[in-house]
Length: 113
Image (tube, rainbow, N blue to C red; front, top):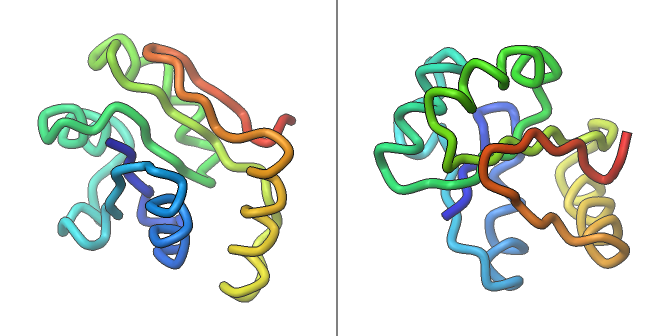
């Protein structure tokens, strides 16, 4: 199961579900205020194995989070912020070229850095 960090657009959920990804958003679970490490722990305890974020600082703290929850993958999304419809479209286009493939214990930059 994948989790969208609070900084990710929840409008991505329908697209991800269309791709067969079971997913939810941190904000919808009441986790929007959790720090990165606490979010990773809460996500892992709830059965999530992949966290999508735009937070570059999460990438810096990911090494510690991944030690605590080695079965989790953190994916840092490198797409520019746009109005939600445009953002979902650019996400869809990037996915069409290179879908996200989570790897447990890894920090992934997508769609490439």
